[in-house]
Image 1 (cartoon, rainbow, N blue to C red):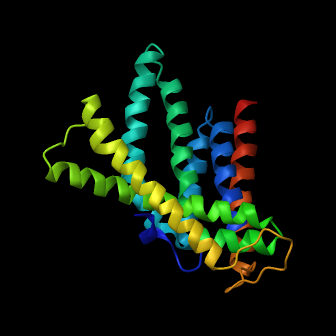
Image 2 (cartoon, helix red, strand yellow):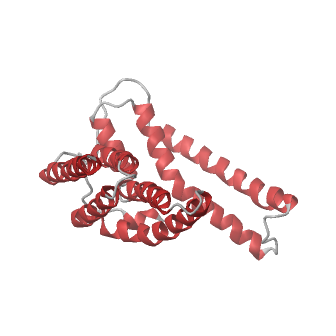
Image 3 (cartoon, helix red, strand yellow):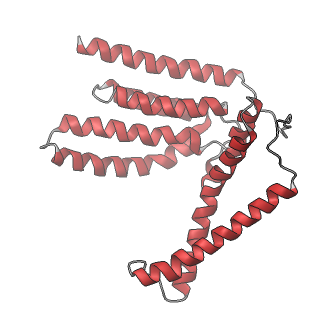
Amino acid sequence: MTDSFHIKNPLYPVFSIITSLVIFAGSLLLAKSFWGIIFLAAVFLLLVAFGYGRACFFMLPFTIIYVGIFSVIFYFASGRNINFAIQMAVRFGGVSLAAVPGLALEPVCLVRNLTELKCPRLVTLGMLITLSFIPVLAGEIKQVRGAMKSRGAASLWKPSVLYRAFLIPLIVRLVNISDTLTLSVETRGFVADDVTPSSYKNVSLVKKDIIFAFLFLGILTACIVFSILEKK
């Protein structure tokens, strides 16, 4: 499902991961200030300007729904404290926005980048398999659910149906996929020794990445400074 949100020229993969972490940390740091909202809005527009518009607008309805639900819950749980509810909304909004750089990044780009940075091959292979397996797992669950519905066993609330009609077929399919992956790795001559790896396509740092990094850090720094001045 996430393949449709991959972009041709994403940010430098390591920058993408760092950006996600900083967005999350920044939303937590600025949650108690109005500048937290400004920070998320500015970063959203920055990502859109750098080609992440499809992923940003895909996440927007989901973000509005789940942030709205949890904000209402925390509003009543805190004794109708609107400020606390807004703070939680900023935090949850930061989580959604932090997922955008990763959503638009192809796993193979990240693996190529880590390979060029001399990351151990076992780590890069495991990361590639893990990241690529998520959409495969979603597809397998969808197929098993479709098979259940065609056989009249659509409900998962019954333990017997959940175990025999859903879990067992899903586990068998995942084991078969695991065996196929093992054979695929072996037939391609993969070894864990310290050998010089080759890459089909190099991932390099370009001017676009530097410009994004400066703008992103500028937004973060400005919001932190203004939030500190606001408290004085």
